Image (tube, rainbow, N blue to C red; front, side, top):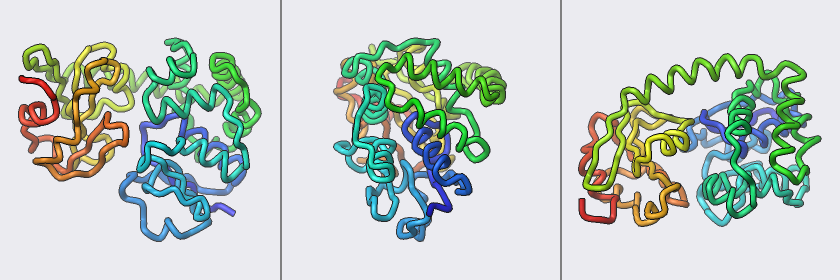
Length: 293
């Protein structure tokens, strides 16, 4: 019996969204609670009626703890939930794409799994991920369960989208998308971009989540330093992994001078325990970029 499903605050990804929706299908009375990934209440870890999805830094299926961020070799949380809660070990191409994208980025997933990135399908994804899982998680979970082993990503997302649209679950997300688009454009308008030689870096007093990938595509910046999306006391340093030479940028170097909060195992985002206003932005760039600037 699961009485509470705990996951991280927005932005959502396929990984946590699908896992939570499937659990809501199985445990319709369970409450979905959103927490900061590094601020999971201690008592949740050893409560088998509390399922931790994509938060907490522990992979302990016997305790219903399904995080993977602490170990890059682990599959994404969705795969862990499917394996241990549902006994499903089959990896369709859709699941492989979601898994690789969550762990290593969409670009690598597209190339490795052979999924064409389609702007229209990405817009569908954005709408779906805005569905309220506390209210509609069970219905979403039923649609996802029935389509989970489809092997073609394009066919899968279009089928899921049509099914959710038919039962009226996308009306509210569409309204939210329109409002978010306005907020995104407003945020981007306030972003400061500085050039350090041939290195273009963006600074934002507001988080651009969940639109980092889009912002990197549109701006071409190498690095983004922004207020952390989950805590105003923290600052995020994010690199544009779409650029080949970004592999030379070592974000862990920022911890030489700033307190460490989080470093993604793949190294694409580092979070430091300092407010955005207190960070020496030029110093951060000099620390992490492995070239003379």
